[in-house]
Amino acid sequence: MPHQVSIDNSDIEFTVEDGESVLDAALRLGLPVPYGCKTGGCGACRARIVSGDIHHQHNPRALSDSERQAGLALLCQAHPESDLHIDVQLLARDGRHQVRSVPARVDLKERLSHDVVRLVLQLPKARRFDYLPGQYVDILLRDGRRRSFSIACPPNADNRIEMQLRHVPGGSFVSYVVNEMPDCSVLRIQGPLGGFYLRDAPERPAIFIAGGTGFAPVRAMLMEALARGETKPLHLYWGARARRDLYDQELAQSWADQYPNVHYTPVLSEPDEADHWQGATGFVHEQVIRDFPDCSDCDVYLSGPPVLVESAKRDLAACGLRPERTFYDAFEYAFVTWPDDESRPANG
Image (tube, rainbow, N blue to C red):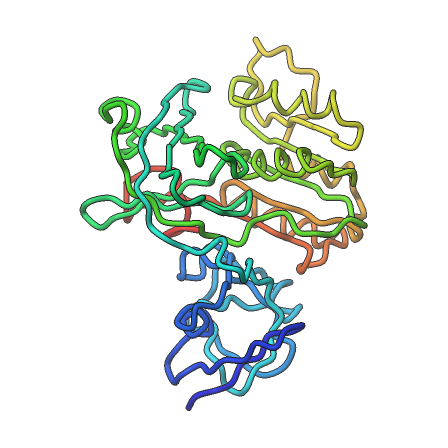
């Protein structure tokens, strides 16, 4: 039977029809609810159930036990069993950040490291492509498949977006981009997608934990925050295997050198002897725990492989991190779309 859903701190109410998820109902009505993969893998549509009962249609793998215990749910898998009152962070309600498909011309391709490629796309200038730094887009392919990448820069007047693509062995799409895609090719993208963006919490320090190319959305968030004069403490931890994998090290270090509120800690798990590395080593989130044994007063942003995101959520929760102050964007290896490419779970 249909159930009514109301959104906390707003006058929004809507009906979820029988057999419909809360997210599907919200999107049917054009409500600006953040979402991504729609399969429970990315966590973009996470919300708190203030009152009422739901069941998840499929096990939402992006939701940890501590998040469930805190009353959080993924709206893409949430089916009401009663009327609901939910707390969800809506995107702009003035038409900005609306998901749409647009053509995009390849403006630049360049290598940033041995396995990371910078791809810059020029979008139509007639209408600004609005998004929140940290969100991502899907590249739509002619055969119906799609490939997902975080936007690595904040919105700009030129309507250009930048992405950082990791080239892994057997990665079909990125191999095509690197070796075959002609200059000035026209792609089609859909976005913005995802719920990974910087929350407005001036009273709390923010900790950013990035693994590999998980640096891309964090890069966009920090560029935008610093451009607007953010003064609260911003702690960036970037984990990689070796020194050469810190492909944007100079930019990250320049933030720490220029802004007194920015603290940057690169962490290498397997530094090469030639690196002569004197910095932090091991798993990146474990360095955060050493620096913040009590992170109950912090917001934490996680971006990178699922093993990083899941381990960090679990271990930081033991250090007092509250689930509602944990925001994440987990990359995955997507075998359905492009075998062995680093991606998100059907996207997320």
